[in-house]
Length: 112
Image 1 (cartoon, rainbow, N blue to C red):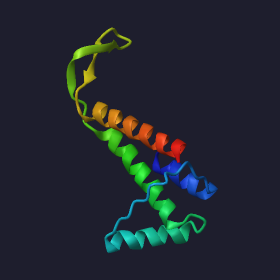
Image 2 (cartoon, rainbow, N blue to C red):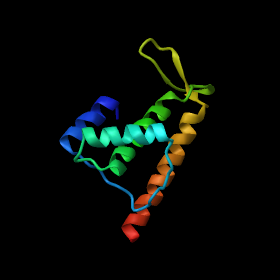
Image 3 (tube, rainbow, N blue to C red):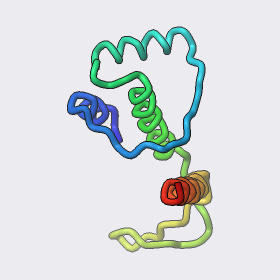
Image 4 (cartoon, rainbow, N blue to C red):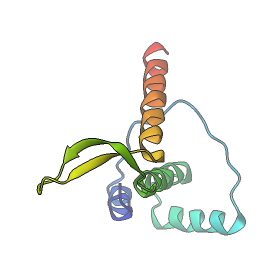
């Protein structure tokens, strides 16, 4: 999700699925002030949901910014026939771990 989409969702008061797990954090004073400013701009969004949305945008950004590290195995060819090599960087492992923990959260929700 991009930031522009996030603001659109805030305006439309859209909410997605939320885990039962609770995370507690302490914010730097400057960030707390900016969070309060956002909460005032979007009064239908509680600060907790604003934080969840901001974390989602940040995680999407992190996922897209891991550097590509060229592996040795060819996984595809582009439209010109040139080989595309597997990514040996952090992205594949991050995606694998994300799927693993998503599956765990889904199992917990189904069981509870």
